[in-house]
Image (spheres, rainbow, N blue to C red):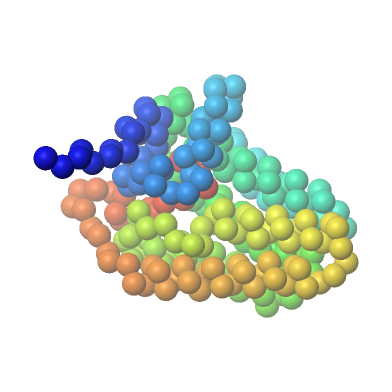
Length: 230
């Protein structure tokens, strides 16, 4: 008689709710995702009563602020980028905690995410990356998400997701804050471009999945590991 197979511990209630809203993705199987979500759920307890959409809009404002601050105050831009990323996690955590997740909130969150992605690419431009590189970064960030939705692979997580763009923008701002050298910023932009291209290949090679009657497989829906909203 063989030894029993080890089983993964069952998901906690918030994790189950998050998984149900994200096409069945198991956050425990995505590196660093579950610890991040747990941190967001903890903070969300102190924000009960705050409309999730207000947090979403604050994230967009902070991302835009990062663009304006990046050229002359890259250290402040770094803070704004990180704060915008925090809002991206908190809006969904508050919605899950309060049980107010909705399709309208999901659409608002998706639009806000793409606006923030473009803003983060603009941060790289403002701290020294050439305009063509920033435009390419923005196009790839939007393109990966659009391709996943069109290909109907909502549960696919690629190497190019919101956390990837956030890290590239944050590191670019950090490099500009500590040095006048342009090369570190170019490396950050180059990494963004490389991740974006690989992500597009991953989406192109993924097998489309359509579940009859499941709106999550329709165009306009896709996962976002950096957010806890559906």
